[in-house]
Length: 188
Image 1 (cartoon, rainbow, N blue to C red):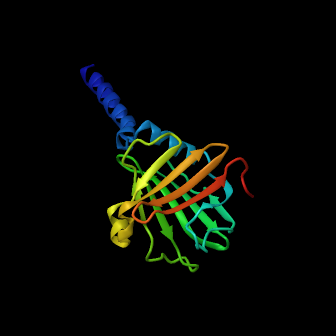
Image 2: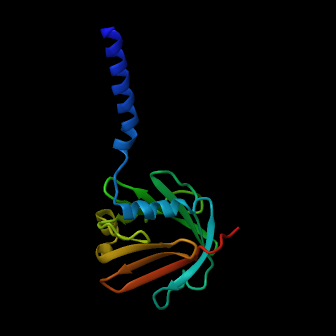
Image 3: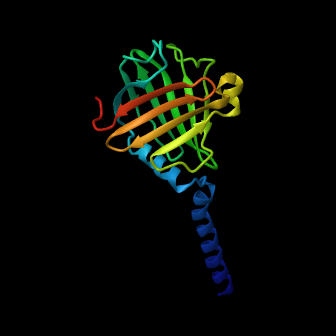
């Protein structure tokens, strides 16, 4: 009888511990970031048209070009968003959950699929942000790559059913970009 009680107790303890492990191993991030990330995941499998609504004078890369964001791979840990600018499909935004917040990483690839040397830059949230807006100041890697990024912040804004905005602001020289994607209707 005593052996049976021990076996049942051991089974319960180990079973409950096994159930708790996924909860313990998952990074805990502020509720505002959880809501923002869940909103991004809600867009998974869809594509949205957009355009540059703000760019520096003389910029010839973004203004007037068709832009499409494809919310592709979505897991509990990251959302991958390839972005087309005209016929250029070299850009991908990766939003991932870290141990203390969210991270935005930019991945750039050549037409043959090889990674560009100007890739993997971005930043992580330093504050809770808002359920609809998160800021990503440039991290050390990004600043080493381009020292001017020391005063740079990327911002993502998500207004479900309305718009998704990606923006960049570099305080040192007032460089600003803003791309807006229409979430009111998915693109084929």
